[in-house]
Length: 152
Image (cartoon, rainbow, N blue to C red):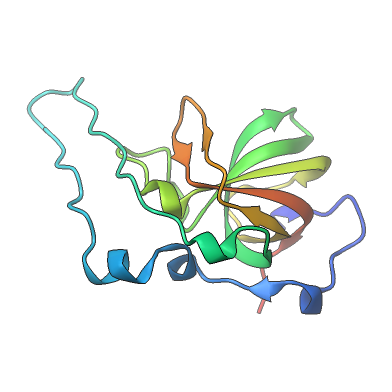
């Protein structure tokens, strides 16, 4: 079931469907930065997280973005702050995805945690304000208005 919505769902029509590639500037899509190499000989060497640039035109946009949740704040029943990432397991493995492929979500209403293996839709206002956590850094922040199970 994924994350269940605790407040009324946002109308999908009010939020622009956004894909993860939309968060990467075109010049970076055409010439991606080198991905850090993992040193398999040194088990304590953690490669740096790739830094991705933001798309300034997305600042203040109402978006609807699919992804997977990496909980940051909350309890065993609800989460209020999380990273939204494009694939399951991101931020658990090293290095984490580039900063422009992680969105910090603040969702004060709280989303019920049922099964974090499932994808969700998150709707809200996107900003180009970065956020940092011990797990990773995010180039974008989103003030969430809804979290719903992913379906087409």
